[in-house]
Length: 230
Image (cartoon, rainbow, N blue to C red; front, side, top):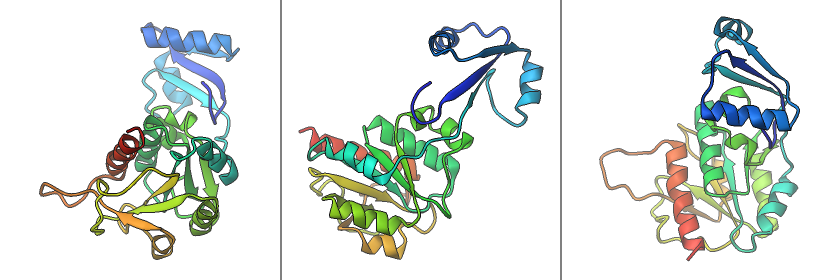
């Protein structure tokens, strides 16, 4: 009940008495958030088509952060700053899972383009399992220009590209950096690709040719943090 989308009210189906429900109710009372107990049928009528599992939080609009704010957060880590950039990822589920992976590995923010990209809404927030309230997200008009700006601030811009011969395990991740992940089908756009200092890939050992974006991000982020924490 914190972060970048303020909770305005909470709706619960009558009869929910789990430990997690009690914890959420306690947090709501501390923050003076109104709580409404209704029958499941009324909950479904009020929020049609929503997979609610007996609980719905109504929030205000998601608050996007500025590029400068995210950069400043990362710079405070002095050599282990980590920013994610999504090059026109269109699937809400993929974007939400990417946000969750970024929050798990302690990324300092995510940069997404304003157009031709999934935006942070109800679907992304749910798919992120709450991580959208923990990881700052910046929305920019032109992703390449944003990457160039981060480059000028001292960040290395590294793109994930399956065709690259440079393994993530042989790359030196001990620096402030931006990890760029491409579109589900087309990968990195030509413009963004040209703005990267290097392209890296995950070595393949099995028969599958590729990984889901969020899974690939988790593998790379795990290696980044492993090296940085040595």
